[in-house]
Image 1 (tube, one colour):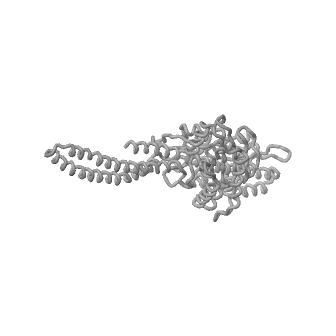
Image 2 (cartoon, helix red, strand yellow):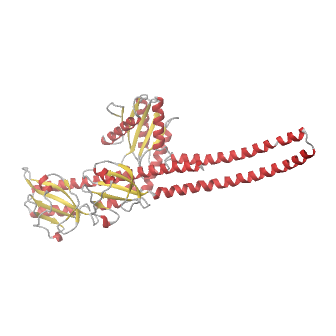
Image 3 (cartoon, one colour):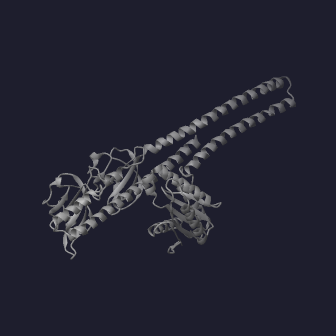
Length: 495
């Protein structure tokens, strides 16, 4: 029972940690996608503002550009052009009939810079977000602004991005603006509602993380959160605590069902041993009553041999139980998709090497454009790419190296007793191997890598990991498909 309880406690903590990390990673992915979408919206508006600025007084050209901007994709539900006083001079669709009316807010006109507004009610009563760019003449005169509206209750690109929720359980994602208004929620009645909880406080401070919180109904939720670039918004991905716990109960049920047959076998062995013991003891008792001799006493001493056999049978049963628990522990320490080590194994190894003062190198890896693989080919193909790369990574490992998957498409390889030049050589070999491989139906996939090296126990492992991650993102910003490396505290060098 103690083993079962210990297993339950360990598995519960592991499942909650993994669920929190999964929600954090998912919220970060959605936030990045929304940020990229808003950045693209601002770029399109900037292009249109330059075109309109050259022909601001020409109503036909101005109207044609507004119509083109509105119809080129589904980013905006409506597009307007306002003069420097805030009076709307062009709009699309024309059915709005708002030309001549004044903008609800003068903030974009006063700021005269690209802006993404908080949620507010439009002139015709729709709950919207307004994305705008100032319009300048060639001589530098401020002429007004061009802006696109995103209706929070209607279909548009933003709505499609956040509503594509791939988790099949009761988890969900919602979006808030800097004034705590809900911009998107699976329950459309909650759009526009003001939210006040610790997770929203954290995400509006620009933080990214995960936490156990209670929702408005008092239910415990595992929440991951991330800030959206360009906007001051935040994404929250929530999953009921009951979801991973139900998985845990199913797992514990399987353990119990696996133990019951062994327990029954142990009882059968016990009954058999007792019957074997009772027969010679009965004979010995009768013999001892008739012949109180040394020979009879010796025969009674033979009882301990039978007891030892029972003990041996029970030890075998206990070993089998421990083997099952060991398999469960192995599952808790490995990534289920790739079979590589998970973050728990990574942190344990680094902690041990740090205490021993062992030199090591860290290679942080991220598959380039992995989101595009998921978007174009689906998550099943994305999983195949991850598994193929994990197999390639395992083949590239030496004895004693530790390969781990720590995120969606993020991997880390630990190289004990390895210098920086040797680690760079390993990283470059991995990069070239993946680049030369072809993974159907995706084809060629590339990899960005950051390599950091620590000498002895002086450097905190978290700093080495952080340095490797920073070099990885430097590799991505430098064009991807490359290796950038350095010692801790030394500027990175491109390979």
